[in-house]
Image: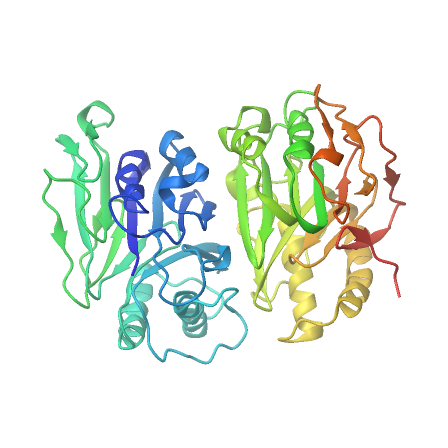
Length: 257
Length: 257
């Protein structure tokens, strides 16, 4: 199994604090040492970092922890291999283009006997069940909506049909974003919190680090953090229910229409 | 205009030396300060770094200069914007998946009135003529060969037809790789050299750095470096002819069959 970290905000925000705690689980406070990755949207562009070294040992992870890249949508992943060898092409998150936008996807879990027909438009490069699921999701979205991105509600409704069919094959905790919204689905474990005014101090559970967010934010900032296991000891995290799919926009989970 | 740097080798090799000189042109020894990027193949996987800061100021470029990522195929680019604003989504190289492999592309030049019909399979995310040309190339390759990657000779023959049609719209110095071969086309300026046994010392032209490659190689290593303008002062670089398309495999330009 692996661990997931996502961030969705109303203004570009850096993820240094959360990533610092999360990366400790990549080989130090937890055993996810078979690679890691992170993708940051900046406008329509994506910065994509993957490494098959453990996150605690990776010079690229050190860069992320010290270089405050500001983004409104981030997805990160630390890997403990279940399917697919330890290789760069099997590191999450994966990136593909659909409708003239990049899509980023990461998965925690294990899919059994998941072998959908892929028509060739999106084909896995590596050998994971996860990348297969991502390619299938994009293929089916394109099949439903053709060459034009639908409105968010239609997209969410389509995912609400497609995702459970994949999740039926096993465990499918996943995050998916096109840079405007972040979708998160829970099979077994996913938690979120929304940080907004009045901001307070947060204390990491995996390392002796605390940040007083009131010093580094404006009253209008709103940041949702979504993660496999809560990252801080003094904040109230909300657990997803099994089978729950949430869509985050501007730092808030949307009410399903 | 921009500058391009490519490397194609028979064994995984780091590009620290060449990138160090090349990155100086991103704002110091030359004026290409509108972003930069580099993509390294590792097996079928790709490490892709882009930044819209000047390469000389970029913490990510500093990482590349100090962290020896070993790769058999690398494409790098420093940008001076001609078409498309300075934004992350307009930074080269671009990456897409075709036939279950990642393809990496970078372009130096300017295409006028280049507006091909794109059927939606590969669509630009940014606003550059370059990404449009890349999407068109992949679309046409897929149209010719369907869902299966052809043999290298057939691929090269197809590119030898497609590339001149694009180049007719202006200047199309470009590099393209799927991690097995590196294709390079020259409209106006491209040079290459092949380093192989017996290796010697090379001296950068853009910074006071020299490397004795005999100390860091084995007699079997072979490395082709392809670049807009020669990077070293004491080696013999071969200039591409206008309209010349070369395919590099295992560190050698292939003879067209």
